[in-house]
Image 1 (cartoon, helix red, strand yellow):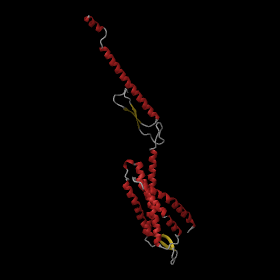
Image 2: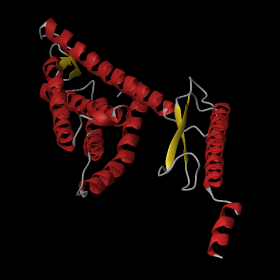
Image 3: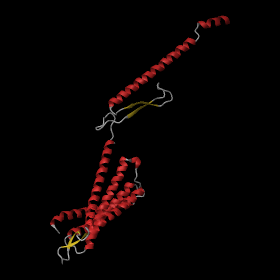
Image 4: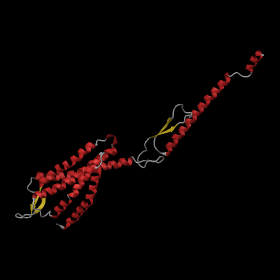
Length: 293
């Protein structure tokens, strides 16, 4: 084995040792859940996929160790194809999780992903990974070091048609690029949506963008002079969430309350004057007393 491959081999060994117990624990915990949601389904499926990657690590290390000394073309194809299947399965499940999280955060009222569809997606991902890896299985073979040599390098075969080689290369790069772009775009949109929904304390302006319209309401007591039988009144619609706009609205409310109170006081005074005008005075009772006497 070339000395330049040792860091790659060590990295695969560390990932396998660390990921094996962690993913096995996740499978045990989520596999016992009775009420599953779509995130639970994807987490369980991704844990199974990563567990398969960790279990396949010895085969990968063996491939790097005998990469220049393969004796079987079938073994070369199986090792390379298995590596692509396990890796692409994890990548596709990661993209499916990104889609599910995007719908939950950015489109909570129009969620397409249900538990049943999540299970179907978790099955489709490995099937799609196998289909994409078929050109890899066809394209790779052992290239002998010499004409009569029994060993060779596991690499793209020169005996297959050139269009198969191009198809394999295109599938590998397109699948990887699509997965990367999907995750970057969706998680970028989720980040922006979360920032826009950040809670704003009353009386503080937003750091970015104009403030949203806020409706201010004030509860009314039973003896309030504004109206009878109403427990609450909408005071004003404040354009903005700043303290100055809220203060202006409160001042307007106070003026409206004073105006209504003055009107009711005037009505009460008019009613009292009307009652006093029609009430008989003491002089009107004198003729009645004299007549009775």
